[in-house]
Image 1 (tube, one colour):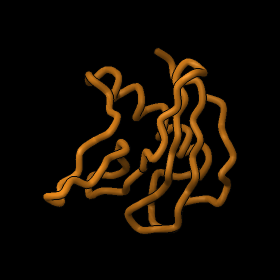
Image 2 (tube, helix red, strand yellow):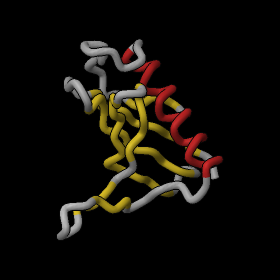
Image 3 (cartoon, helix red, strand yellow):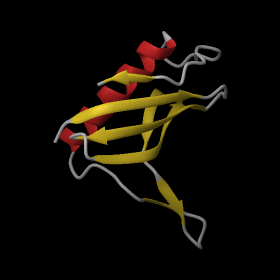
Image 4 (cartoon, helix red, strand yellow):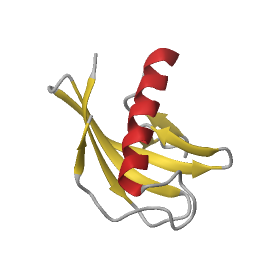
Length: 101
């Protein structure tokens, strides 16, 4: 399974850096992925739903570490190309254009 498109929409916020949608094999899309600036740097947060007890449950997520690493590398690479940075405050750009994956 290949990621064939990544769309990054940067956000001007300290923690939330961007919203992302990805397309697999030009036939399946996953939206509402987030790039978060955490204590250890940038990470990819998969789409989730808030439960009645206040906890969150992922709606879609990789089933193994190899796929998680592939997805994170692809998404963060496009984010860095688009914004020209690694997530430092004020480092986001304003372009919402799609980048080829």
